Image 1 (cartoon, one colour):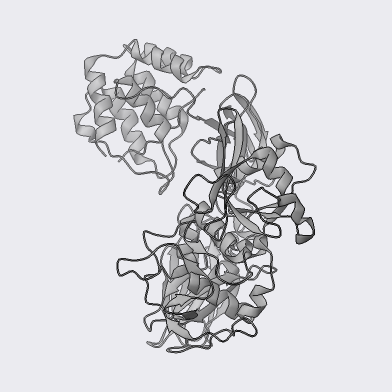
Image 2: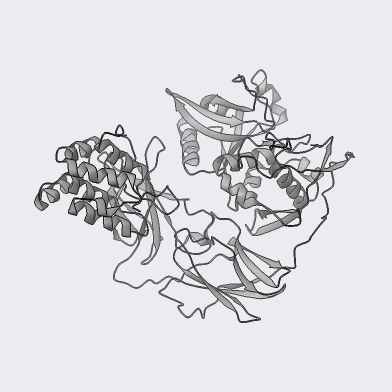
Length: 574
């Protein structure tokens, strides 16, 4: 595979620093200092430049070696052999410094190649790589794995859409030598674009960040999406602005946002990072009813913040103490108890939720799907309050506006066990993990009652209401196995929440002796190719009940892809 990426965006990988004073080769030191100065992704050509310096004898040899390393179709094995031929003991020592000491950002692919150079690891010949050039705004050329899909997301326009900063569109494919030339139609000068390549095996390169630029000035004003933040009033006379989700961009990267309380005149400027989300609450003096004006500048326009994108109104103070509970399922009269379990035991996991005595499989299946794909989304979802209540944030499926629900820890149940949604995990005191039960309670509160939730619903809508972006339904009948496998592989690579629903009760005979159930929602844990057999891993929200069980009866099982298509009606990808 051509190319090795030599860096990563902040937060994508653990950082490794370099003690540059101990690097002996001046060429290697020069390139390493260039790496160290990078604020974002280190371009792949710089990694190849480092390899050329490691394998050189003279500057002219380094130039020739760089050309050989960059030749289209050069495999990682070819690159390793070219560099090893010219590596001396001092340069081996320099490689050790690059690997063992810590500020240059190295991707796993780059680290593996350097480790292979000094015999610390076997070379991963299939590691995904990417070399990238911006020819003009939106025009991208370079090298990737042969046949790889080139994906990109315009971070400058992402706040106006529904996706995360990692939700890319496919622009085209590399040819058999790994060359590609693609175009991103909505990119304008000054836009910040992220690009990666994804191979046929589903593995993707790290993200590259490029700025689309030419001789023209940046013509596009920065966007801001006011639905991506929440306001909260506090009894101490302050108003805080918080992210509704840490994965949904609020504005474009590196823009500056000014929040101004129009009543007091106080303002605060916040510089966005490369993911363009608020990383900490922004707090102003204020009170319920205050209007907070939001203005944004990308450094090229609106530098005086005269144009206001919109205003946010500070809500009333949050309730304290007891709050109203949702009614139980009609005809049920269970007592209540206060759950004292920890919100999380070993963090959020897709195996945590367990459906209770209520016909709402779409709720635990959807929440488990979110937790399997991205546990941090569950951390975003629920927040403990200092009065013992918890706040759960959902999104309206139609408008994608955030909506907060405050609930206390009282649950319907018997003998200290919840009647409705429960947990598979228990904390050190033997108490059931509480997050799923409380999120389900908040959902029932929002929708009207447990009785309303028990009448059934859409697992895809539930996922959208948790994640704040639209769900895509893939109806499986008539789809080829290759097509479905590609959808599943892409969803898994992009950390999408995935779930699937079986056919209705009128087709119950379809499930005779299968171990599956009609009219039931399952979480999709993942997909894999096991020695040529394509398998879909699923989870029953009962935390039990599975076909051809593996002996654990925990509800998690593998199903051949052909059986998945035959037995499931719809696949949800959110």
